[in-house]
Structures are given as C-alpha cells and as structure tokens.
Amino acid sequence: MTRDWQAVAEAINTRMEELDLSQQELATRSGVSVATLRELQHNKNPRRRSARLLAAISEGLRWPSDYLAKLAEGEDANEPTAGPALDALREVREELAELRQRVAALEKDH
Image 1: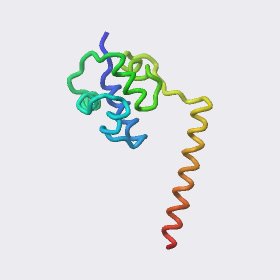
Image 2: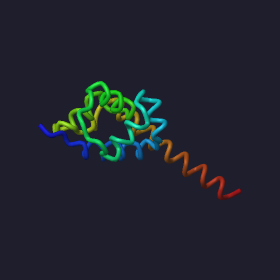
Image 3: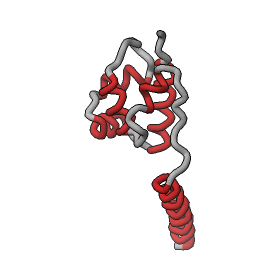
C-alpha cells in the first residue's frame, strides 16, 4: 500500500504554523532530528517511517500518538474536535486573544 506522505507533510506544516513552532522546537519536543523533520515537511526522500517516529512527531504536535500514522495510511485521522480538554483549550485561546487585544489597546493609548 502506498503511503500518503504529502498529506503527512501538509499536516505537519499546518500544525507547526498553528502552534507557532520552529523545526528546532518540534525536534526538541519530539526527540526527532531537524533533518528528519525537514524531509517529512518537504516530502523529500519518501520512505517507510517507523510508527514510533510518527508517534513522537504526533505527540510533539499535541495530537494523539497515532494521528500521523493513520494519515499516512489514508485512514480517517480527523483531529479530535470534542472533549473536556479541547473545550478548555478553546476557552484559554479565546481569553488569550482577548487579553492580547486589551494589551494592544493599552499600548496604543500610551
């Protein structure tokens, strides 16, 4: 079965942007080398990757450990959209956005 490494690359890049992560930060979080991350991000040298490697990157991106492996296999790997932890995260993000707006307004006034 052919794996969909382009889907993996797009998912990694999109998620890194969402989390505002650099390659080095993701490498540190996941324990995966920057060179390996770069290969995956740019879909260079597509080859079989271990489930352990994909799990480490998934977890570094705050996804379930099997997320990228499922995506590579073409399975439905929808990111979780419900649950108490994600609800709390959404709430924190909304509060953070509001605080950023307030700080910006205060800085503008001074």
